[in-house]
Amino acid sequence: MKRINVNDIVGKKFNRLTVLSFSHKKLHPNPSKGYFYFYKCQCECGNITVVRRERLISLETKSCGCYGKEVRNKILATKRTLSHRLYRIWRGIKTRCYDVNCARYSNYGKRGIAMCNEWRGNFNAFYEWAVSNGYQDNLTIERIDVNGNYEPLNCTWVNAKIQANNRTNNHLIFFNNQTYTLSEWADILKINRSTLWYRLKRGWSVEQAFTTPVF
Image 1: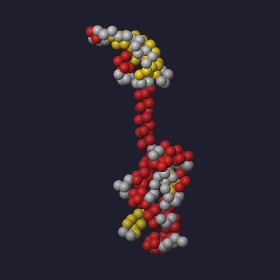
Image 2: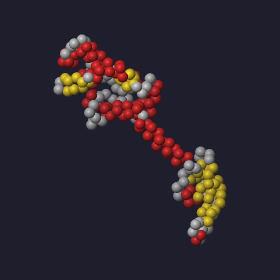
Image 3: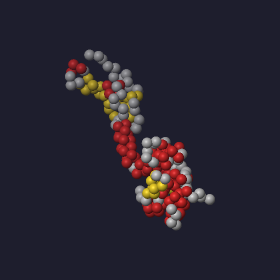
Image 4: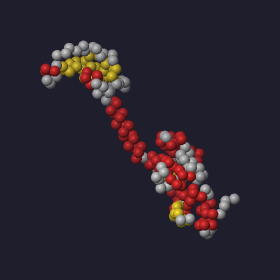
């Protein structure tokens, strides 16, 4: 049976645990295998715990238990983020701006409409802007300049009534063998949405409203 120097790992650090001292030994269930050796350790979080030697050396035990809690909390936080309405909005913007397979890509990404770098790679930045600039669960994001990018100075939150008015009650308009909402036509034609809406409200034909230059 191999003899063990019980003090050889005292002072050493394994993952988050620093070995303070030898604690005790316990006879293995199979006596021919000798003893289990246990050590008093201090975790980075400040907690004191007792860990078996083999689990320290193999790095199987990483902490007093705080590491596992952190991992679980991160998983829960990720799940909450993925289910948050703002995350879905953020993903939707990225999809129509950058996913060539998205049905709406031709009206956004293909036309050069993008999401600013600050938001594109950082949902938290988008989230912080949203909650600091009037976001509520009953509001939707709108670009002030329909031909501009998704960025802090060009985006605002509007309620469903305003959005519906901006989109002429969201009815679809057929023109040039294609069908889109008024808001989408505004993006395609690069004419302000309110201009198109006012023309149609005055009784202009779709062709006249969509093809008359803006002076």
